[in-house]
Length: 307
Ligand code: KG4
Ligand code: ZN
Image 1 (cartoon, rainbow, N blue to C red):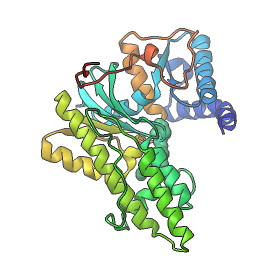
Image 2 (cartoon, rainbow, N blue to C red; image 1 turned 90 degrees about the vertical axis):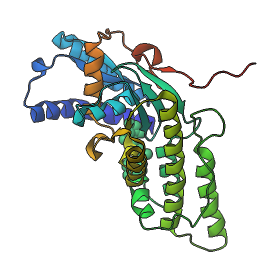
Image 3 (cartoon, rainbow, N blue to C red; image 1 turned 180 degrees about the vertical axis):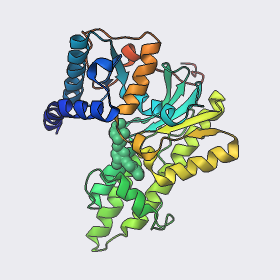
Image 4 (cartoon, rainbow, N blue to C red; image 1 turned 180 degrees about the horizontal axis):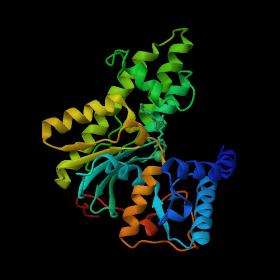
């Protein structure tokens, strides 16, 4: 409900800003710069935040810094891992995005792989809904998966075939939903635990496999896994195992910094600010991505085949 989301932002922003200042024990005038998410997301909610931040910057005379939401998720890893320094590889998995990024500096992130349709979080949330689990169902799917038999169902791969680092989660999502509907038509009730365990096993293996391929191609020795779905216990365990065996330093933010939070935007904004990337008061929001403004770009690690 985009409009309700925008209204909720308008209602909450002032109060939550006051609360954050109180918790930090500082005054508005102590803030050196204001970082704000400008992309991607629901445009109404983004515009509410961008205009609020503009107001703060204008009234205090302090700089305004534009932050890409996905870069924010990855930057959350800097909070608890001071040893983490670019270059490294990052996997961002959230409700709206699934991207593999080559992080070259604190501000230059190059997308080398992504989902061509649904995001991983969306795949969990939509299959959870069909199982009668309220939105967002990702966390409950995680719990159920620990109780089920992961060999009960065989679902299609989300890792796209061929020389790419891309995913497609819509096929596996549809296969899960069809499995549930088919069982219901026969008056059977599929075990939610088994569905969750089989789906989780499938997508976790796919995500680890593509990320492993990206690590090999880039030669990076450190990996950040971030975003709401990085809270998934099965995903965390699988990456810990893979990285342990392959000599890759793994940084996954603790649970409080996986889901959307303001601290991650502040950290990303801090590095943008240090790099001199300050926005002006014409800053706009962008529902899809902030490529031109925040320096993200898409690249392929695979040589182009002759046309
Ligand atoms: O990053 P985030 O808070 O918001 C977006 O930017 O989308 O991610 C939210 C997503 C939702 O899809 C939610 O179901 C999922 O993260 N999520 C999980 C878990 N905790 C949150 N998915 C799987 N396992 C979890 N433990
Ligand atoms: Zn997010």
